[in-house]
Image (cartoon, rainbow over all chains, first blue to last red; front, top):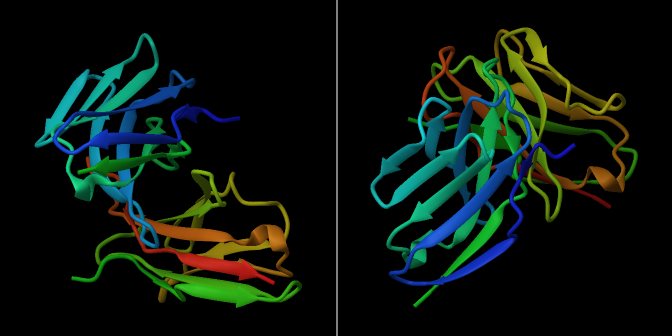
Length: 112
Length: 115
């Protein structure tokens, strides 16, 4: 039962443009959402998070938007840079703060 | 200031052998999580442990897999009688006792190949 879905396996964007990654979830009990970035042969690294009491969180070039009614999460990267080329996972957890449910990931390629 | 340390980075086992994966959490972190990533898939939760306690093992296969986090030493994920389908990247993560905004810290993973 895939509770967190990233329907776009890949995204190609030009350097300097905006990258928009999408994530949908089915469990209305999720109250905390995160985005992780992963390079090949490395572990995921935390990027940005958002609590369910907010609808937007911004950190530098990264902004996460949460639409609870639509059960939809998105990550905006502006402007995109070549170093942003990686796999991006969204993740969600309930208030119990134990396991995360991860999406399958979106491979982002930023081209010059 | 070491992060989460996993070893070995790569492990090759023949079918039927045992695989032992080790994870040393970050200093000050008392919670350890194990995740598995199969090829072309996302990370799947396996088990959540605190020192000497298994808190949630709902993602662990019922047979051949076990995990521990002893009072002293690293957390161990053990896979007995490995099969080809166990080939995957196994990631360990740790977190401090209180919930913080940056989620877990992951290790670099152990890539298990069963031949």
